[in-house]
Figure (tube, rainbow, N blue to C red):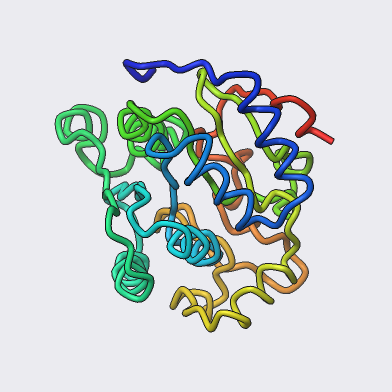
Length: 243
């Protein structure tokens, strides 16, 4: 758990929830970044196939907003190059690349094959624990999950509280067409692996292309009874965001 745990004020939650319903995603983000949680909020981005949407929105509000990127040390080289290209294109000024603890990796995954033996533990070691550390000091964070991803995300609220910290899902109600339209309207570059059939991209061993008709995240942990890495843990909707 983070060293510092915050309890968001009820008034802040109600305000963010009400605006999230009435306004566009950029307006919702603007309220949080420039208003209720100014200086206390970060965007967590995978720099995956849909990530440019939120990164572009946040850059248009405040390029100094902290962006946390988890480098699990198992990522595709294309993802790292895409990160660098987007950071340069959007002028993001505070991108924090976070890596897992080297001693923990040596102790638990010395051969680099923990993903095969125990994928949940591998995700915890390389993503969950590093993100908990990186979010220490922040009262709120933004992520790009959407209901259109299906499975556990099908009823995703717009606003959540997790570990005493506010979590915003500004694109929760966006469809695949909404995302595609935003890319086109803003001439955003695509992740290079999208052309190879990857619709959702994480670590190399646990990401595969998807076939026509499959869900967007069907290539993640293919063949396993696993759909999430674990960074979205026990949470509950804030105010009325579950509707």
